Image 1: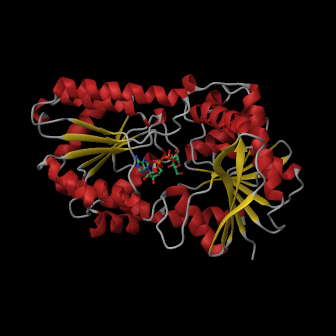
Image 2: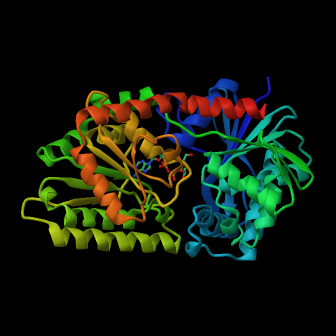
Image 3: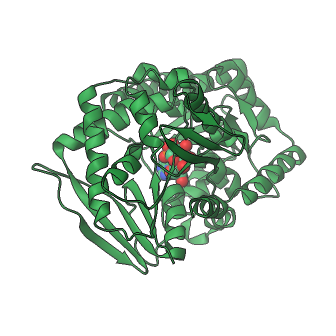
Length: 455
Ligand code: ADQ
């Protein structure tokens, strides 16, 4: 049986017998457990000299984890530079945050080649290679240059933007040409897939047929839509697990019966945290009957802290949180709780279950698993309400949420007021519809469909 070789920028820390993190890690791990195989990626370590050779990280059952360390120079150009300073903002339509430097693009390609050469020594001719995300757009091209003829697929976890946005990146053509080195390109939504096909047809003179097959740069590539999901029952189970209620019960006690609006994100400008804080302020201005009667909690651990834009957004949020609380707080009520830290998954799911409103308002998001986890964690007999950005991939499936435009702060404020007043019957109806969709598009379905199409 062909093995599966998974390649992602980072390999998730996994230990036998312990629950894994959400999303990518859980989905990938299930696939590897079924088929056996290799997971390869960067170790997270930086060496002061050259990149290290591949080393065996760990063997977990039938899965072998291999990693390599990056040199400082590669880390700066590839990871901090092109991947997170250029591609991430561009793919999320945030071109104002995107920098561009050809030397960083060279570094990005250099690391893709480094990965490819390392992989060439690990894979067998009939292995299937499944690459993940925007760090590895040039991997298949580099693998083919290294002489590999394996089946190769890429799943893009981020959005793929409209061609006019993608073309603000001066390396756009080289990137699309490289992406066409894969046999299968998977996207989160039909919007993303169509945007890619549009580029191929209108900018690259290629072809796109109704069944998703694309012809460009002398290659034929299948494209498909594979919305990533969650293990619905597992999330609910975790949300209720008696052993993990420590934080949830402290939170519950501190609320003294007040309803909770909850947001959980990595601290990233694409997640729309600042406009969300302003929308909450607008909500307090326009609906004063909620004063003293509701609490908004934002959980946002810092991410990518060595990139200046990320330090800026952190400073801006701290200032906004202080200003809003200073303006509205009472001696016995603090409207906004801002927690600059992460929680273990086992503690997070019970927190979702405490919240009457899940507020998920990214400016753009490939999918957004927090939205799905929030829905899955709810008590079906008395569920909370999801307020969801129209620009999250999840909005394509979860159309029974209260859908908002995150740029419309007044609209978000109105949705919060509506969510807090929503009768139980309507909440159950919306929740039931979302849960049914999420069961259809589960994490298992995501993985099985991608792997089946790749093979
Ligand atoms: P992310 O941008 O990281 O992922 P998201 O999908 O919301 O965004 O979160 C991934 C996981 O991280 C979730 O399982 C969530 O529980 C966890 N997480 C998020 N914030 C956390 C916090 N503050 N504390 C603890 N855990 C937290 C990228 C894309 C998304 C896409 C996923 C998967 O940007 O659009 O949904 O990959 O494809």
